[in-house]
Image 1 (cartoon, rainbow, N blue to C red):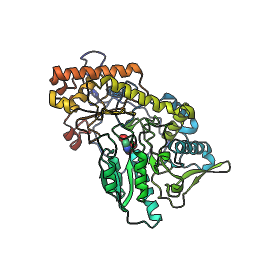
Image 2 (image 1 turned 135 degrees about the vertical axis):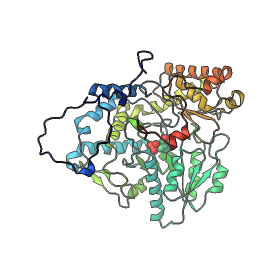
Image 3 (image 1 turned 90 degrees about the vertical axis):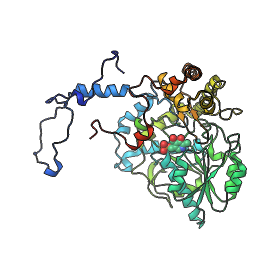
Amino acid sequence: MSIVANKPEPLLYEMSNPGTIGYSLPACDVPITQLPNHLMRDDLRLPEVSETDVVRHFTRLSQKNYCVDLGIYPLGSCTMKYNPKINEEAIRLMGMSSVHPMQTAETAQGAMQLMYDLQNYLGEISGMPAVTLQPAAGAQGELVGILIIRAYHLSRGDIARNEVLIPDSAHGTNPATSAMAGYKVVEVKSDARGNMDLDDLRAKVSNKTAGIMFTNPNTLGLFEEHVREVNQIIHDAGGLVYGDGANLNAIIGIARPGDLGFDVMHSNLHKTFSIPHGGGGPGSGPVMARADLAQFLPSPIVGKNGDEYVFENPAHSIGRIKSFWGNFLALVRAYTYIRSYGKEHLKEIAEVAVLNANYLLALIRDVYDPQIPERECKHEFVLNGTRFKKEYGVTTLDVAKRIIDYGFYPPTIYFPLIVPECLMIEPTETQSKASLDEFADALLKIAQEARDNPKLLRDAPHDTPVTRLDDVKAAREPVLRYEHA
Ligand SMILES: Cc1ncc(COP(=O)(O)O)c(C=O)c1O
């Protein structure tokens, strides 16, 4: 976006001016050696530009990006909440940013104390005291959890269990993880209230069941009304219960999965615990488990010997899953976030997240169709766009693209897979009432446009540097270089 209307924005290669350099190196103070010829090339065309040109180019690119610091980012299931700046101050402290993973434990006691305390906080929040901070993402946490479940069964000589049950509303990583760990995935249907269908569950559970993996509240934004019963059915069959706690925003400080009968779970620090997602930095998906499963955790874990923090290797560890100690600075951010709230106030995250989701839903529910209208949502809600498609010939993709024209990031669409023309919205607790009102207002205007001028939606977005991409072509034949040979 240029502040001078219609001023063309030059691209870095087009700004190239032979002879211009954008760097200055200090005088060489080591002997000069010649690189071997096979490592040299002279066909690499790089733009010859000044430092200012480079800075302006990347600043311009960054301004084309939408981010959570600019406005609501209502991606359901992804919990795109504000990333408090105090987290960034904490990671910039010398002892945090400069600690080296090869340092000995004696010289890294402060960092280890932080990890030890964070393990305890997550243990307390989840109700499961055995904690590893190593996994680098939610999906890796899932794999660790499933490998722990496998190690548990094998340690008991229970070797015939080869199935993992997963509800049809699950996040795609759940079946993928189970399959990666060598299990057959057995799908459990949802019922009309958005819960797991207990009859279907009972029909599918057996002595082959290693466990079940499910999200609660589920991806419809609904609390599983029979959570204890589900967990009992699995336990009675000798299986373990895995909780996909990627997103704890609806229950943090209010309900503990360990108290509800879950045995193992992961949580994405880059969701509930305010760490930037994706391009914003590396993630972290710690795993929590009930006490007797501590022996299987990946090694090492931070323990305490008297006053000294030590690295411990659990007796029957599933092994290492990540180099060094996990994504340490992600851990520092989560620690800072938890400490900023304090034990007494953590539950306000969930209270406001659920309030915000229900408030937003109330503003738009007469115009958009909630998937399960008779139930209150938790931290997110799911709309069904079938009527829009039938009555106005407008798809959920069209609605999402039109949202971009109103200056917002669109919500998650077409997930969960069980909802046709699905639109999944999670506002999070970090949006003000004004921001929710503004977003609802845009959604209502878009619904009006869908009725009056559906083409406007079908051709959206109108104001972006590129309009609709061919999604399939973009995924199959990505153009990743400025010059495409
Ligand atoms: C419910 C759920 N489970 C698992 C994951 C996987 O987490 P990650 O993307 O960090 O691997 C996600 C991420 O979007 C999720 O929403």
